[in-house]
Image 1 (cartoon, rainbow, N blue to C red):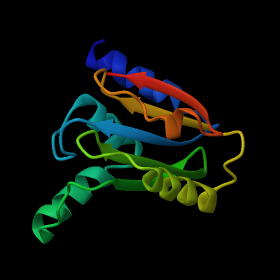
Image 2 (tube, rainbow, N blue to C red):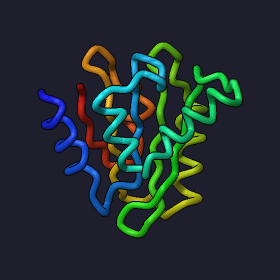
Image 3 (tube, rainbow, N blue to C red):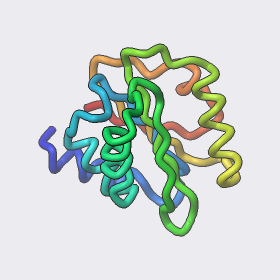
Length: 136
C-alpha cells in the first residue's frame, strides 16, 4: 500500500461514528512515518507540538500517549502505544475510561491501526466496541 493509499484509508475510516483510534507503532513516536503524519494532521499538529515540547522538557517517550481533539464536532482521541511494550488490560481500561468521559461510548466504532507483524490484543478485539482495523 502506498503512503497516499494508507492516508486515504485512515481518513475514510474516521467518520462521525468513530470515537477514537488505537495506533500501535513499532518505532518510538518520534519516528515520522506516513501514519504518524496522518494522525498529526487529524489532531491539528498536536503530535508535532508534543514532540517538540518533550525534547525541550526532556520527557521520556517510551510510554503510551494520548492526543485529544474534536472530530465531527465531538471529542476524538488517538491513543498511541508502542508494540515493544506489553499492552495491558489497565492500558485499555484507562483508554475506555477517557472515551466514556468524553462521549457515550455505546455502539461506537474504534479504529485500530497496527503494524502487519503485530497481533491486536484480545482485550481490544473482544471489547464491546465496533472494531475496524488497518494493518500497515
